[in-house]
Image (cartoon, one colour):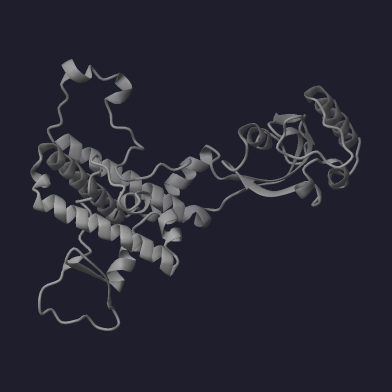
Length: 325
């Protein structure tokens, strides 16, 4: 939130609907008369509205901002621009307090909401950090996910026949094939492979994916979630050595061959499993906290819950960005 306020809003462009990030932990300390100058190793780098910030405090603030903002502040000019906007924020916030705006019911309610949001996120992160799944729990999670094929891998190669509208450019001296023409060509190429022609050699001369084609169609080792759905489905349905029927994607028709199947070992995915389990354990703690609290919903206003809504959703955790599964 603080990053959006500091970076997205140009100086002097504040609107009446903007709300100050009052719940942000204090990193700026008032300048008291007679306060000794800080050590040279951590000098004051910013002062505004009677408050100062040392270099370490400013750099800590930078570390809490979104990645895009951190990239924009990688140079002295970027840091100065951020400090300019921080100065505007502090000056406006100080003036708002001097006018008693924090007592306005709407503003006070928004400040409370921001404070609750910050505290809830910090609390949940503490629950995550304190969760300590043991080795047996991690291995059980690994086995459960592997039973669903989550850690399957396949070393594969392909030959692509592009279709009109594909993002892959037409090769020099090649015709822009219609869907029907591309399918017929893919079927003809498959016949040549079935009769014994070398896959790598044919990929080098015939594949419209020239990048993989130069490597004999090699795509490397692929895991689930890294491919276009239809392509992935075909890869993990093939037996090693088999050549697929033409598989259509937005790029064209693919002839796929899986050369080897492997499973990602436990030790390689252990950090990811630990992260996921810690979040799950924190979510269970949150559920237990909900059961002890007196949460009520007025059915006249909210309606009656559907059966699927009675239990809290397993993947809903405050402050946890959604992740691709």
